[in-house]
Image (cartoon, rainbow, N blue to C red; front, side, top):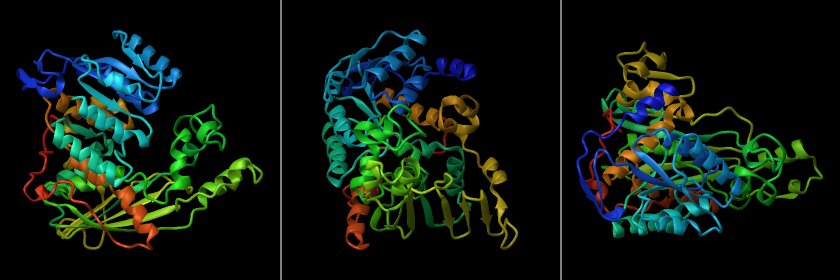
Length: 450
């Protein structure tokens, strides 16, 4: 951590001159300027972003907002411990974040709040001319997806979906292999979010994870809001950890696009069984009927002829996996089993251990910054996603994971809900680029900056 702190504090954008940034109230940025960042939501995830921001010499944390006074106190202590200037504080009510957005001393905001607030806060941030970074997923409905796109196009203000898995070391190595045509022409992808979240969706109202079967008003942290989605929605409510990386590999929104999707759901018994097992049959929550199926499977067709299978599996006991499979005409990578097969390179009909391949094609970002990133959170991914956000915001340019990505990836939730409700009926994917996917160029991922 000490090494990483020294590195970040000595890092600046050497290539950036003085530019005029309309979204930042005509502020002129130079290589010596700092980006003034406000945080909306300083729960566990927001605090992680805060800690990483405080290590940067090119950032000032000027404002924080949260309706939980305990979280505000924790955030203020982190800032004080880092010798930072005391921030302006907001959180007197659910809409006090708008007063944070009105501050001249805020250039960019990071939004890490419950899902139902993501789009409205991001839209309000863009309306206020603030470069916005929003946690996943970005939207809950198709209307919200269009709200993001329409606001970005009307205001010219950028937003970034903070999907950290796009920066996972093995994911970026495989992206490098895809770009270098190791697997040949791409054909098929599998991905998902397969993570036992029962200990996240329920707690005792005092401990965030691992104890009790309460949620909603009696819960704390994510159980306070996340579990309600399982009660009321039969949908893949969390698709982007898996879909984001493969969408980039498939050049979605940049020469390719999602065309249609079908979804199916199993029965939902996992959460009920957990409540009974932990709290007994007489616990009030044992009477709740959860609408969400335990395993939800969606299949997307793309304009370029690939298929993508997405699995949401969070209510049953299982080890963690995002279930990646990246398959082309000449070979494939599967994350489960950590194995790769490349025709003409691997022994016929035998898997290779993926490790030598991943080391050979290690991404330039990880080669350069890997040692500094490891303590940032989630194995280093959090350093890279936050770095991309800050560097993009300082230049006021479109980020690697932009508004159109946020809309397309998040649209899986409402489309899966509609398909499941109609016995797997195919759902047409909106073209959020309005046809521009045909000529939009892919982001230059194979570089060592961000």
